[in-house]
Amino acid sequence: MSIASERIERLAVLAREAAQSGEYDRARERVRLARRVAERNRIGLPRQLKRFSCDRCDVYLRPGVNARVRTQDGHVVVTCDCGGQARYPYE
Ligand SMILES: [Zn+2]
Image (spheres, rainbow, N blue to C red):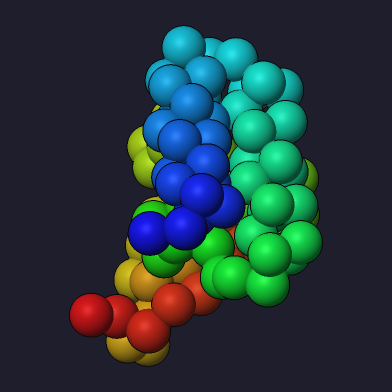
């Protein structure tokens, strides 16, 4: 694993921890930083972070706490408290 992807993994953990303590702005900073590192190094975000971060406000998502999850037409629809939505094929 490259240094960049290790850094991203660590930021993902820190973002989750911040969200778990209700520090959503801190969670956003960490998600944004992880995205920047990924972009700069031309690597993708880990799937976990991709799925658990809001594309609209960058917060780390906690289903049932700051995000709602439902299934629709074979998709999982995640709605953040900010109104941002993401759809994934159901697995
Ligand atoms: Zn959001």
